[in-house]
Image (tube, rainbow, N blue to C red):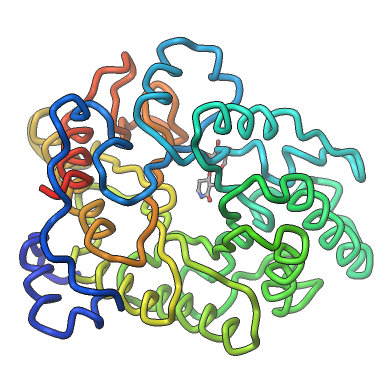
Length: 351
Ligand code: XIL
């Protein structure tokens, strides 16, 4: 890993080469203005120009403490798992959209947008799908995408169409049931089907471990470039950003990766950010400070990249996180803002 750089150094590097190489858009004249004091307690009110998102679960929407933070902070909502294939279609052909519908209704009531997550992922394959023949999997795959993307047609801003399809070492595609039975073309097929079912939705490829420059992000870059060359409707790439404050990818490397995706004309998302701190040495305060820096510096990379349109956190309170035994989110388990929160607030405010 290269030496860590401060965001300021990264931005100087961007300014020294053509700004277009750092994002393809016009050079920002100055950082995003600092918000009025009355907005200082709301991430979505910072005027960052970026959607500020969180993953949620429908069951928590009736919890007043959860709702108070959710309503105040976020304008982009993702279902943590309730729009995944195994959550919707536990038995073949019988689909339950109730939880996903509750999430979309909540977002609509708040004027927030929704990103559907996720149509095709090896981690959310219903058990009955595993035993299908190739021909039957093809039918189930197509009907799943048509039914789910069609159900939400016109109501979602975006979909994570294919999730985590690249092998961890970047050597090629992950060896999933889809690849084995449908062939490598399943990725292009998924995007085409999703576009037919919901032509207005922005369609993303989403993955982890390809946030910075490296073998995996090279493969993701080649994948989306290849899709574009085939005329496949792909609009962007999600960088999941499940990281540890200790040993996080360097700012310069993340921003270079964002810039090369942007240079393809693609949008970029930080799509599932959380920052583990248990392995940071020192005091509790040192851990919280390291977490704050990671959140600040990385969210600032999105703020500075014109093609980065959203930052989504994978939850917001340590009371509800998929990371067992750590405290990776912006609010503690008692819904008190952590230093990390103020790091994000600063970054979104242009500081
Ligand atoms: C996780 C959810 O947080 C869990 O609740 C669920 O049981 C498993 O999936 N990458 C992704 C997300 O794209 O869908 C995963 O979410 C976390 C890793």
